[in-house]
Length: 374
Ligand code: HAM
Image (cartoon, rainbow, N blue to C red; front, side, top):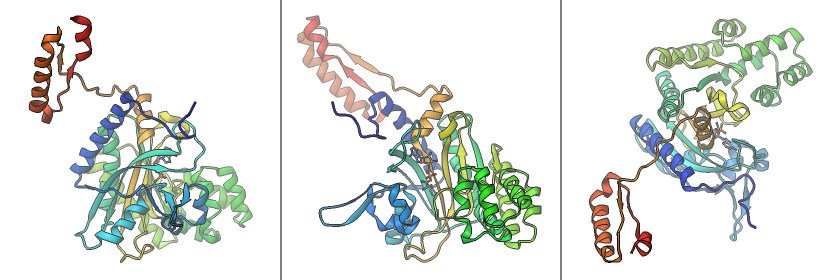
């Protein structure tokens, strides 16, 4: 018997109804925040992803050579494709440009619950603005998307790569922390301590750094970076973003967490993740932040930021919270009680469908019954 390939899934009508509910609800939230929808191809030239993340990404993506000898890859995410499209076609558009998308992504991950080889993302990119208000609005949008679909329990964690770089500089850590960043990303703090000490950081400083990575106390972070003006400036920006989130958008479910460094290579400055704590290991529903890809792809420099929400994990989180998904009900049921009534029944069904189609009314004509009932 044939089976769906490892890490992929089929979706039955009941499952598709849940997915369509989320997509519809999120679309109206994106539109209400002034975003326009964009769609890019499912596969891209492979260089787009190696230029973005280096050759190491080849172990994590589905790549192939087509019949014309072109090296292609199924997209592992949509930020690089959207920015490629911006540089190719949209640079002259008025800024800020606010783009949203839904799309399937493909990663050669080890499959488990909440982690698939084919999965769907809902996401957005903001091009041409990096004010604190714009960043606060971006965080508020991510949070609102998840709240509007019915999730109760979600939490934002906010990190900052400029501050992390300043700390690396202060501790004399080489190569921009290429060894340390993945350990921080995976919260492997024991291994991090060993690695820091291997790089010549004394035990006291290593322990203090690991405490800073886990604290949400801004004053403790400020004291640690006090001698780096760039990091202090970045902390001030974070404080303004937080203030706007709390007092203008009335969102309180967030923490500063410098251990949020994001796995992808293109981020800089503020980064964030949103978790659904009920989900356990694969609890990260959303990830994003500020990044720079436009100049790498040959465009003229503009600030960019964005995020993506994992569609599949969002459904798992709603199910874990016991959310009752809205089901579409039947509005009209037409039963031809005998064979003679069949033409009239079909006619009525046709007329109702024409009349009511704009109201998304469901009309069901039970033709099969007639042969039994007659
Ligand atoms: P990401 O954190 O790699 O970021 O993915 C975003 C979300 O996609 C994750 O939080 C998770 O919910 C979901 N996800 C990732 N991998 C899998 C998987 N194997 N199975 C199921 N769900 C998964 C990005 O992709 C960035 N492009 C986000 C972004 C947009 N940054 C700026 N703009």
